[in-house]
Image (cartoon, rainbow, N blue to C red; front, top):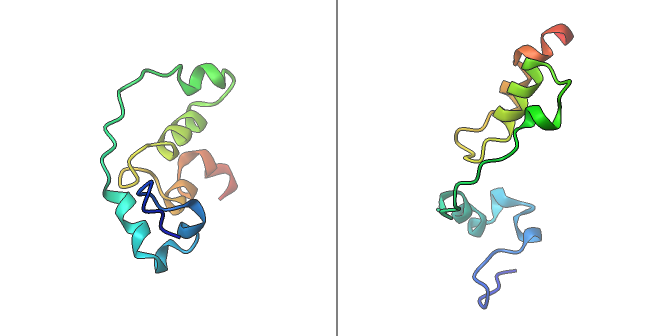
Length: 83
């Protein structure tokens, strides 16, 4: 349900985002978060393969238009042995 005091859409309202026009607005919002340098996935997964690290970075891209889709992820070289 829309909350006029906080001007946001509660999480449960976006469960059926396809049918809720209020949820479409969040895709075009520009939050302007400050740039922060992280530690990097390589440091957190020191034994991760080059392919696994590349896949994680592509799946964790902030911009949804640039982020890899699930269908694209399944075609990634990380899953080559499973195909």
